[in-house]
Image (cartoon, rainbow, N blue to C red):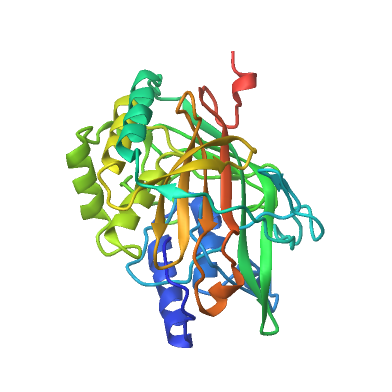
Length: 371
């Protein structure tokens, strides 16, 4: 969720808590847990507080575990900063500190840094045209009832952790994340050690604990929902702007982020997938970064946009030759004030890499176990 970096007062935190209560009523149990850290951190109510610990977290950058997200509130919340702990990505070693996921998913390694890649508006339409063409040619098989969309990724993120009025960086180390979802979005499973301590994961299936089955929508879509969306780029972009009005720091940044959300843990039909890139080409401020690296260390070319409020640049990374989507990352580009000043320019505030995306016949089944 895009946001500014101003510190909330007690009234704002209370308002945020009420917002969280309202927006989570329609979520199934698995989605409650998935969003607990992200959203509760944004309103200064954290996992550690739920365990009775006297620790709070202050997020500093967009939450980048994108699927099954809460609706984005039309209020300004602190941004969630994300960095790596004890890993090597893009040839940069993060040494010392914690190297694993510990203390309920928390680690305390140093921030991963990178050289901020040079961004240019030159060649943006041409690159997105090539990406859209490659997406259209890469025909996705139709997901049938009873099957599941499986997405496996590598990801890491970090937040600001405050203990006894001292704020430092804490991070989830690079780890594997696995998600399964039925085409109608009513059944699913999540395995992510940064979200749930159990190695078995947790259900994302509906209905929720109140017996409700929320309908899919743009910011929490199912495959069936995506299959019904318009594939006309202009109409699609107009829908995105309309449905995200009032969210994020600016309409253009929110539109860019919304499209980016659909590139990771979703499975848009090929024609829609292509239309998303054509729509992105029409958003002002989109640039090309000639060299960017995903969480698996793969170099590629990035389509990106800078959020002027947070000073962070969201990058979608593609293979330079095939134009296949590899992953995404967020890099702190400009200095911001307040607690955000702890996140220095050049910090990799989030990184992910798509390792496998497939259709499987059973929940918790992996492609290697199929057939």
